[in-house]
Length: 173
Image 1 (cartoon, rainbow, N blue to C red):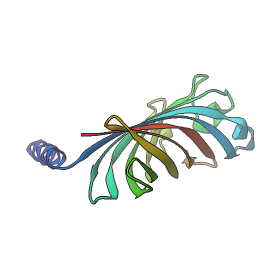
Image 2: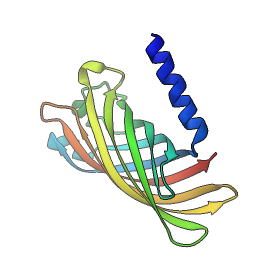
Image 3: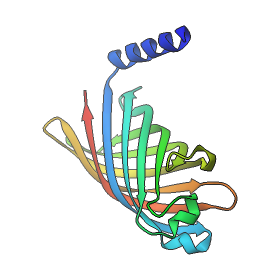
Image 4: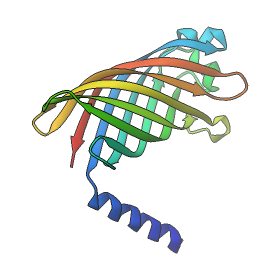
């Protein structure tokens, strides 16, 4: 327990000394392929929260948490869930920025981690993806639009590939 507390304090100190970035993404995901094939019509609303720190001027790394709510009942077979299917995603994230001018940039984001359908650890899966976002600075924050490719796998021939399209808000501390 003492080791865990020391690690938490060290992590807090690292975040306190670094440039911390908070990103919120909300989007609608279109499924393009899935196994079983019936779940190919599944769509879902995706919300993620990234907490990253600047390693260099253009690269950030950190952790994220996401929530996906599936609209279609066909997704219940895919993630082995009830009628109101949702997942909690916990992942590592890396972001690389390319400045276009003083107020705008393109952000490329990669992530990967675990996906927990309806908090059921017996159906544990994984999620990973990559995306690009165009963002502009407005009053100390960045607002951007973009899309990504997201792959989810829940074992035993249950997987899907989706394209989340949405809005991202970045706040720097």
